[in-house]
Image 1 (tube, rainbow, N blue to C red):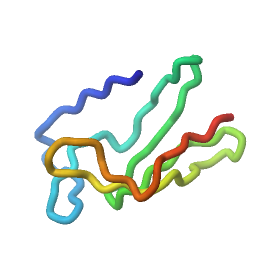
Image 2 (tube, helix red, strand yellow; image 1 turned 90 degrees about the vertical axis):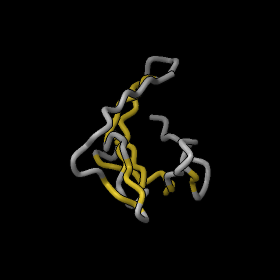
Image 3 (tube, rainbow, N blue to C red; image 1 turned 90 degrees about the horizontal axis):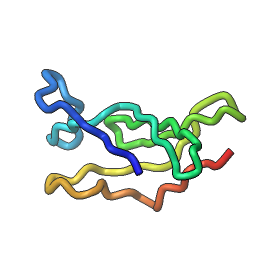
Image 4 (cartoon, helix red, strand yellow; image 1 turned 60 degrees about the vertical axis):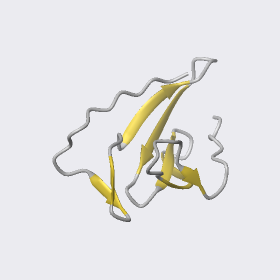
Length: 83
C-alpha cells in the first residue's frame, strides 16, 4: 500500500492535452514484502521504474490522466520489474 499526498497549486504544473497534471514526477513505494520500488512519471504519460540490475530506468508503459479523478488510462497493464 502506498499513500501519496500532493500539494495543489503548483505554479507551473505539467499539462497534457490542456489538462494540468498535479502529481509527483517521482515516487518511492514499498511493496508488502518490504521491497522498495522507484517510479517516475513524465508529462508525456510515460512511466518508468529504476532497475538496480540494469543501473538505469526501464519503461513500463504510457498512461493518460483522466479529468474525473479516476486512475489514469494506461495503454496496457503496468507490470513492475521484480529484482
